Image 1 (cartoon, rainbow, N blue to C red):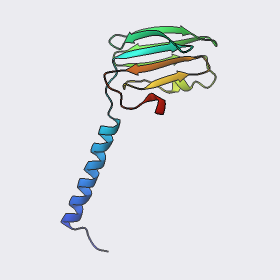
Image 2 (spheres, rainbow, N blue to C red):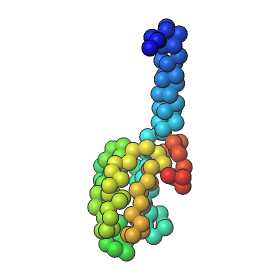
Image 3 (tube, rainbow, N blue to C red):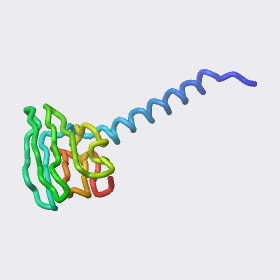
Image 4 (cartoon, rainbow, N blue to C red):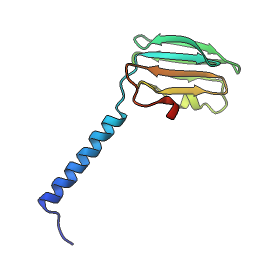
Length: 121
């Protein structure tokens, strides 16, 4: 088995650094500054992420509870059977969304720029 030469090690380090830099660039979206809350396809409220608050949004199955803290938001409780939107956890990046489809409630983080298109999410 042959050992690595100095040039080989340099190429490996440069390639690894490039992969890390591209990963940070591709998935490093901006932090969100507002939350858009929808129910039945209509915007119910647009709220700033600057201060903490709790909101309740009514849907066909019951009430969805949304928690907002400085810089992040999440769906804390929802009457949907699978709880997928609750399992989404805290959302911080612009473009992230949590959808409670059975209860027709959604939460989306908005900011200056979006890291990705939520339609392709």
